[in-house]
Image (cartoon, rainbow, N blue to C red; front, side):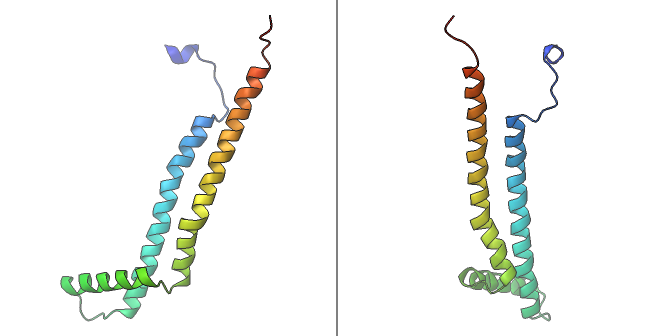
Length: 119
């Protein structure tokens, strides 16, 4: 088949780096969002009334907590996680994309310059 005629390589290709980064990014985002929700729910459990456990009270308390945390998150861990999610992650993505393209274009043009087109 076609795979048998292709040369074997052990090098990590640029497309593989891109795919790995593209798969890790949402995974890390989900982990951070889960951590934020866990911290907010932990704060709610310590502040909330443990006697009322029916569904209507849980939903009402969750909506109240969500509205209050959107306005002013007081937990330092939540603030740090949101800073990572909304501040650090975009910078890492921009740096990765810039380095990826610079290296890729450099390799492309350095290989084409080695070929002599004058003959």
